[in-house]
Image 1 (cartoon, rainbow, N blue to C red):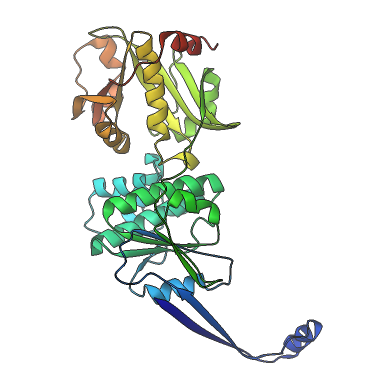
Image 2 (image 1 turned 120 degrees about the horizontal axis):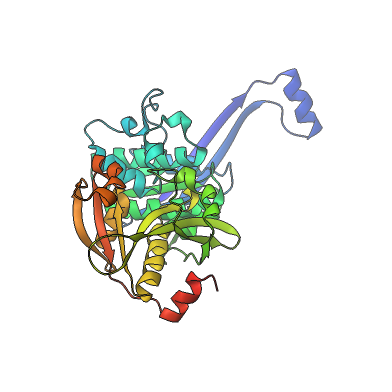
Length: 377
């Protein structure tokens, strides 16, 4: 489908305009006509994600608006309420569970952030919240609705841009929506993995075979508990860390990505280790790093002859484990019961919220390797 947009702008010829125009040998004032031509997807194409890219001023937004006049535009709806939490800024009629699932689905995996006003969020969090609300409005219209995100990833750092692109792409496909990302940054394209890419600057449209997002290759090693200070503010339950924690950190090059702390478990059954704190820094949320880190440490414990168990109140974390072949549900979401004074006293916080219990049943790490890693060798 060929899109042609003719844009006209009129400038009043003032003295200052004449002076500046004379410096650069340009016409002073009058009417300027710009014609933008670009090929866009035909109506009968089957797709979920498209990317309209190119430099600023090349007509990306104009082309997208002409092609998809009835789309939902992220960030262009009703203002976020200044005195309400982010979760209350979503369309009425959406249940809390659906709102939380969308926020987690775009990589905004921080319950404390969900309960803050939009104005208190970081730029990266605001970007993800706008995406989530746009998808919510699209989902209310039904499958196949086109949702457009202008200035896609422009306001965030490039790590957040990449992981956020992968997270939102996964959610869009799950919901059966159509996302058109409009932006000037090409580094997010591989992570977004679009079905087509349009470039108004050259008028071209390219259909793509889905490649899958690039792989993250990070290093995990045992670390000192002092590293917790890098992650503590981002944990959704508590900033504290038990003194007896055995800690591990994931890094990408020299960049800290995630932290996981484990404790001995005192209870029935064979010797076990219990997941205590697992935190992924915001730029890396939404692409499965938490599951990979937790599973790696659980594999280490299993290689050393321990059971690896975990209880979580985070809905996204629980859903991921339910879908994983490496984790088995041992306790459906419920409130903790107080039956043993010593153990249950330490779980008093869990008595006030729903938690689900899991046990790792995936592959065990080689015992020699696990022992070496545990000892820091």
